[in-house]
Length: 122
Image (cartoon, rainbow, N blue to C red; front, side):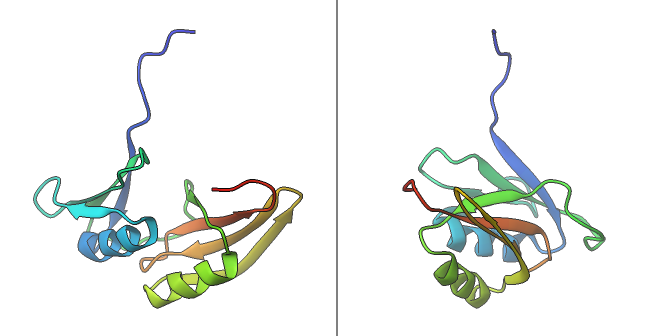
């Protein structure tokens, strides 16, 4: 099948683009740039799609309908590091034959998952 586009990135509405960009840059090992006035972008040099943070006046309300999955070698260590960066574990955990998934929240309560796979390396 012929494609007409490619996945380039994800844009997240937020009240503090700099704070979230700094958080996600530390989680993913990326760099922060300004993409438009007031907007921030996190770029990782491993081919990961970019994350763009768009300023909006209203806070997040309700469950995030789209979330990011971040593969980690050690879920317990990742929970501690994410907590130190201002994120938190929601206490939601899912265990599957292929690995463990922990539901996290960034500093503005956007949910994302850390995934520790059992049989494959990251």
